[in-house]
Image: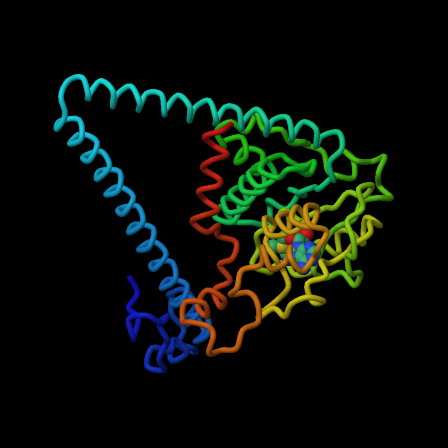
Length: 336
Ligand SMILES: C[S@@+](CC[C@H](N)C(=O)[O-])C[C@H]1O[C@@H](n2cnc3c(N)ncnc32)[C@H](O)[C@@H]1O
């Protein structure tokens, strides 16, 4: 794991390590990285190592907890008479049965809500025509985000009608690998949104942080499109350009009216979907932004930020789902 100078903060590249010293010397080696690129790489490696460390610790903690409960249960069985043991086993059987019944009832209710959304829900499209611009890690990240969007939508009292358009090639293969994906109650389209929703072209609104139009309200007649892209802003302005070329309306979320962001106002796909869902429920942008946009992306004074917040911000790792979101994704998988 990359060393951190103070044990807590991300590493800083020193001048002594500056690869620029190699500049100008022709050799067969790969081109030397600039000081900034090395610094960024070191921070990213530190961040990733720290994340892996946390993940392993959490896994170990869970394993111990399961083991502790199992031992506790075995001891409680070993310390009682035959009759009492039978009672304990029976009550556990009933509890499990009740839990399973509750789960299948919730699953059924979710299916009903999602089916109704197909008729009356707000149309929200994730445009998947950007897979050629992403590396395998970014595609994986987008798939995770889509799983999370589906999970959150399923939990809503009034879900949106979610669409995945331009679902073909690598993106389609990656989605098809999700266990139970074929049973998802969602609109899956190989065609682009322009083709799939050709009768609604006037009502298509591409959401993009680069638009000059600020979204005021959500209109049930309109179809809101989100760029299915994980690019750490490498492809700045790409969705605005696409929409303009297609003659489609664009709009940005009214974030600036309610909060200051520490860096750009470009959010991840799952954050935008979650904000729209929260707004459909509350009709209040402020509540929706504060519920979804992570604290570290909001403007805080430097003294309020800890080293990890800063490192995370600089590394722009926001397209990675947090542990609680991953848990929610696991739920989708086990429920479908
Ligand atoms: C990670 S961003 C992709 C950024 C990409 N460079 C672009 O040009 O859109 C994923 C998508 O979320 C939506 N999005 C992100 N931030 C937004 C904002 N502040 N307002 C409206 N839509 C936003 C856009 O549809 C965007 O394509």
